[in-house]
Every structure is written in C-alpha cells, then in structure tokens.
View 1 (tube, helix red, strand yellow):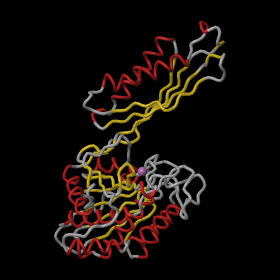
View 2 (tube, protein in one colour):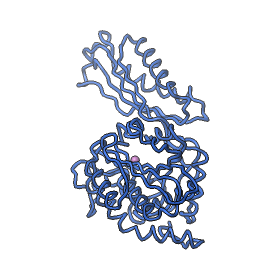
View 3 (tube, protein in one colour):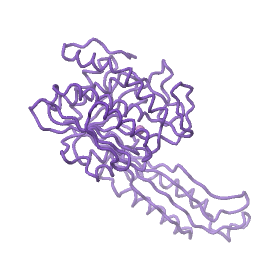
View 4 (spheres, protein in one colour):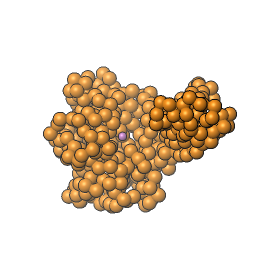
Length: 405
Ligand code: NI
C-alpha cells in the first residue's frame, strides 16, 4: 500500500502536485466539517451554505438553490485555445445511519451519517474549484462544478438536469468520482462502457385468504404463494438472461403472518433489480409480473405490484474513460496502479448526466486496512483514508487541463 505522492517525472507535473499537496490540510478540514454536519437528500442546507460561503470567499461565480439544495459554480480558463465546457459532479448527501466511529469529527446529527464518502466528494470538488480559480492561466474553456443533492435517493441529478444545469453554457463532457473502499488507496477503477448498474425497485402484496393453521383447505395461503414466487424469480437471471450479461434479482424483504397457527391473509415482498445492459429496460418488469401473475393464478390468489425504475446504468464514454485513465496513471504512480476492469452492481444517478453528455465516472481507492479504514460503504463505521482527497483534486485538475488543451 502506497499512500504518499511519489516524485513526479516532470517539472510541470511537480508544480501541480506540490500545489495541490499544500491544499491537503484544508481538504481535510472541509471534509471533517462536512462530516460533522451530515444532511439527508434535499435537506443539504448547512452543506450548501458551507459550499456557497467558500465559493463566495474565493470570488467564484455560482448559483445556489438548484433543485432545492444544489449548486453550480463556473470557472473560466484564461487560455484561448478552446471554448469547450467540462462539468465536474460531486454529490453532497448523507445517509440515515447512526455513526459508530469514535473520531473527533464524528457526526453531530443524531441518526444521520456521511457513510458513503460524499463529504469527501464535496471537499474534493471545493478543492478543485479553489485550485482552478487560482490557476486560470493553465486551462482553456469553462469548468462547471455541480454540487448535487440526494444521490442516495430519491435522486438529485435528474431534477438538476431538468432545471438546465447542462445548458448555458452547454456542457460538452462530464466527469465525476466516488471514493471507493472496495479498492485500496493508490488505485483508480475506471473503464469504458458500463461501470455501475441500473437500479429498479418492486413491491408486491400477495392477496390470499387467511384462516386456521389446521384447516388449510379453507384458505389461500399467501406464505406458500410468496415462497414459490421468491424461488421462481431467481429463474429470470438463471434462465432468461444471456449468461454473458450480468443481472441481479434480489428479494430483500418478505413479511407475512402474525401467529404460528394462523394462515396469513397477505404477504408483502420488496426487491431490487440490477443490470448493466440498457437493452434490459422493461424486460425485468415484464418477466416479474408474468411470474407473479402465473403463480398467483395457479393458487387462486390475487396481487398488487408496484414497479419503478430508479436509476439507469452508469455508462462511460470510451474517449472520456481514456482521458481519465491516462490522467490517473500520472497521479497514481504506485505498484497497485489503476484497475481498469472495475464494475459494481451498485447504482448511481450520475447515470442521468451520462445519458445527456459523454463522460466518465470512476472509483478512487480509499481503503487503508493498516489504519482500520476499510469498512464498507453504508456501514456505521465507514471512514476513508483522507490521503485520497488530494489525489481526487489532482485527477480532476489534470483532466481539466488535458481536456481543454
Ligand atoms: Ni455514494
């Protein structure tokens, strides 16, 4: 595990690196400040105030209150080679989790915690804004920095796009990162094509007929029907999806019954569907309903089904993924290096931005088991190695310079 910045090869690279390294104490301070005051989706009031105050302090033009709590900052380069516009996206929201870390900067908001690293994303975006504003002579075109609410749900990307954040000036490409404890510090996970999965949700209530546990012939047992449905749903991935493609159908909740000798009138289940291939849009909804209809029908049960699509898959543009990969190789000069084939069935509403403009979302390794910083995302003891903060800023800055030149 290498957690320091190695000696850069050229003078120019060294200048960027040293300058960003000197920002590290502030990056940590901002991140810890944000960590202490986590806020749920669309309630990022203190967070947005903090971001806006910093941008104001530095004289950076920005707009607040976009899709409730979102912010967009605009920084124009002084070089004249291009008028291209690159957007950088950071999410700001926290999770309804009680923090169990005993750190001086632990959450001061009961039951709310930055357990996914979005405090780090916001700090990295602030650091990037600060650096770019100080070095406008080093890049051309315009950089839009998008501070987005509610990534953890119900999703802030879509409403931000609907209010026009990608317009005026029109964004040509977008990049974004996620601090990633599934990867060690000193690595970057980037790939062309699908990085993260589409997320769909379903809730189903089986409508049976309750009765005495000793007289099943007088009932329609919703537990038996639900059990068959849960099993049969597994055949969609096993038997309907091309094995070359990847997909998941998970029933995460199943509730029925009140007593051992009472046959349950109704059973409720909730689940999630994940896939990479956009061609699957609509497919799982149809198959799940067919299976539920068929099994309920064969038992004389009814059902109510609600199915919704939360986020589409995160699909990276080949050219932008190559840009990020080449930049990451300059920044992460460690033996671990980059892990190009990094995919997860997790979802992200960065996907909505990537549907509008070409771009690249990538993972920045942030786990450090030696410092006990390796708990998974959304865990009450989640924390990450803050060394990754300056790495994130450096990758963004170099992407801006490379994109514009
Ligand atoms: Ni996250």
